[in-house]
Amino acid sequence: MQEISGLQNCNLLERLYLYDNQIQEIKNLELQVNVTNLWLNNNCITKIQGLNLMKNLRELNLSDNFIEKIGHDLDPNVNLEILNLSGNKISSFKELTHLARLPRLKELALNDPTSASNPVCQLCNYGIHILYHMPGLERLDNWDVSCKQIKDTAESAVMKKLMYYNMRVRLAQRNLRETQVALQERKKCLMKLPEECIRTLSHTLKSLEHELSMMTQSPGTASSKMETELEGRKVNEDALTKRAKLDVNSVERKILLKIEALRERLQRWTRKMDE
Image 1 (cartoon, helix red, strand yellow):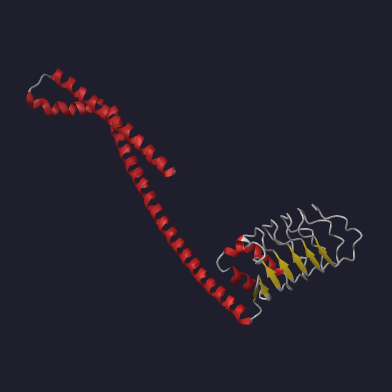
Image 2: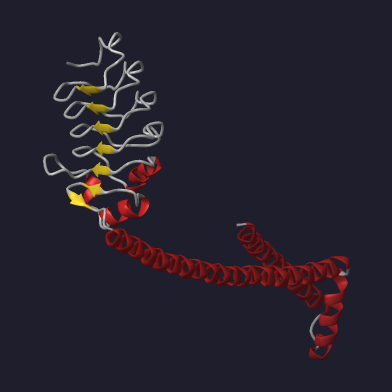
């Protein structure tokens, strides 16, 4: 049997057993509102669905299928008391927490001895997690958990873990804040260095440009100074003037090279500031 069908005229059914088939999808059960016991174990079902109108459902067996998620699909089945999900693919505590919305659930099987276990059953504190979120359970897998002492122990263990993890969270948050402050200070220092370099380079560049401008405006000034210094050496006046002009041109070239180099450095530091 690969699908559920032919139940249109069976509106008074209370027990429906469709186990050991090849059913892939739960459907065509909208009219079975009186069913209290539904067994769909050992099929090929991958998703819980199609049960939202079965308000009287009290026992549901979906063991040995391929179900990975529970989600909100069982929320309408508020009268469900016995649920078997053993031998499926459920792997997270988050999915199990959805079962806490079933107020009358008394028996839950995820690791039934007759079936394979769900991956979630191998996780640490699997039983404690379930008992903390579903304190109304009386039986978990093959164990009687109706004793108040067991539930109190589970609650105590969870509270200790919550305190421990809250402390770890606060510590991590404090470390994060301290790291952020340190990074901000480091950023300020790194930003300060380019600013100082740019300020120094700009000042030097302006001084050189001013000096070059003065030389261009008064080309004879440097020549006159040099002539005065060399008068005592009794050198020919023409040779003096020629040499002075050559020296002035050499100084201008050096200043221009320095200005060009300063502008390149200034551009590099400006790019670093933008980054």
